[in-house]
Length: 148
Length: 137
Image 1: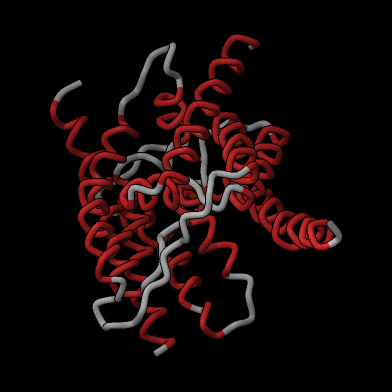
Image 2: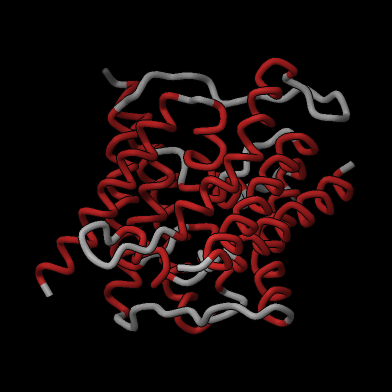
């Protein structure tokens, strides 16, 4: 089961990476061009999003009712927790980082295959940042929440 | 822009969407890269699929680079910016529980208000950041 899942995930990840490279999302210049709304605006990312949503929207709408994989396994979708400070602050921090370099997690990992030297530093820092949250910040916050 | 400039990104987007659809339909997971990456550090055998997905990302990009060709990666060479931005993206996506794939591609498709808020926020902040950097330099 695990091996099968690994291979299916490999297939999905490869498809994802192919899409990222094809659409030039692996090129930070393109992404920053999209974010440069007041300057020379590059709409490429908008088309990528539209293309992706064309497929995912009907899929997830169907999944919301079905709640099972094609194999029949139960699927747990993220609960609809309210909009909290973590979501907002997280999005703000992410937005700043994304706006500074023009890379987010997926394209960074994909771009490792194209420009490893430049991207590896960003990716390493990304991993450190993620671990800082999961292994340091989150546990500390839980402790402080428990004390209230 | 001619029609070819529209088609390739649209096609790329369709593939991304297909990948995300495959991930939820076949694996029952949200194709949110920040989440997949974070969960990959677990020792649980149940999380091994994550490495498959993560490996696929550069693999897919490599295949495109070797066949159709890709645009060169034009990126800053400032180590300070790379490290600083990397830390912010890594931490922020975990704190906000998602990134462009998780909240953008999947969350919006689900009609999640949380994802709509997150996506609108990081898009606006990123655009503001680009503007600020452009103004200050």
